[in-house]
Image 1 (cartoon, rainbow, N blue to C red):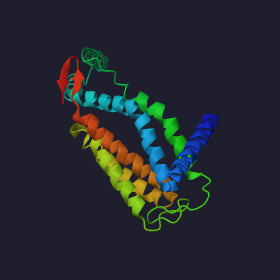
Image 2 (cartoon, rainbow, N blue to C red; image 1 turned 90 degrees about the vertical axis):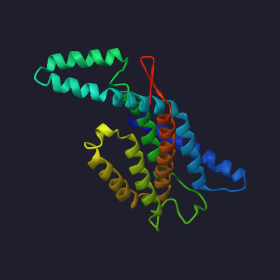
Image 3 (tube, rainbow, N blue to C red; image 1 turned 30 degrees about the horizontal axis):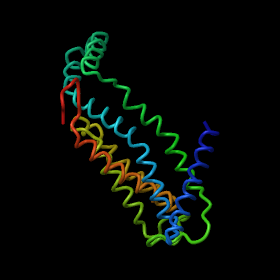
Image 4 (cartoon, rainbow, N blue to C red; image 1 turned 120 degrees about the vertical axis):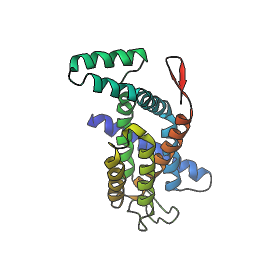
Length: 220
């Protein structure tokens, strides 16, 4: 796995260099813009996986009330509960594990770009907006705040009404964690996280707006 991540990290760094030269050819050589372009391209390439993951979440949300009924009805009979749950999944053509696969596929790439940007050998000027260096933390603390706010919104969008109570702590903890680590991370890496999360929010909004087809029935 380490060799694969090292290889993917090198590939990501080469792509970042490519986008930097692309901005250079447009007369505005800028690493910050190159990171934004790289992030958007990666999110677009992974969009089919994002759609699959979100649709799986929507499917599970749709049958959640029926699952709750079964859990209440057969709470003293685990074997019967598992049989009824399996029948419910089958009747709606739902695989409860399908939401995990897209995340597993994406994970090596997400880790690779994390290491690629954190260790990227910048050459020349690194000015971007108010930032004077992408290798150092954001001195004005703007990117960490943006990243934390975007993470909260993305987590909030991913949480169904049924999960709201259970996920309440995660909705608070995750943005605070991102805020804390972003304070110490290189600004280039935090820029990647902020842009990636914002693009994810846009993609989620678009997918959630589309009706979900379950066993030939369109469900919002």
